Image 1: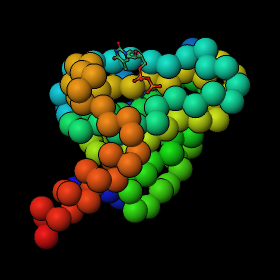
Image 2: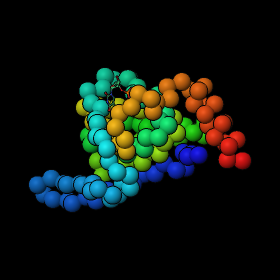
Image 3: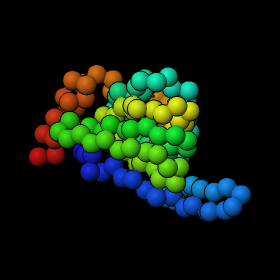
Length: 142
Ligand code: TYD
């Protein structure tokens, strides 16, 4: 069972240049999963919150391409908040971690690399159902 301790901030390569910096991600490096989908969240009105769910199987990698936001991570036992505000850092989040995104700065852009295509069935949107699933997995692993 994944916990918030399995989430990781990963520094990305940064090629500094007087003409502007460049950062890249390649297949398998540093994101270890096969990237099946890319989406981005932008034009977030002040005070809005995105997410508020967990995924049964999906792994994700978040990058603040522009501006800043906070990713609130919760494994049913512990919570932590990761602030992303540099486009050369990313946050890896494995499956079965409850998350929401908040505190979006004006004009922020959140890029998300995902390990699977979109599937409505992979979402757990009810927090009590998430806690039940965590408890069931804990019992199975005992
Ligand atoms: P959702 O994942 O619920 O957004 P949030 O980031 O707030 O949790 O997605 C919002 C809507 O967009 C929902 O109707 C499903 C759709 N959607 C897709 O069609 N494809 C995607 O890859 C994603 C992430 C969402």
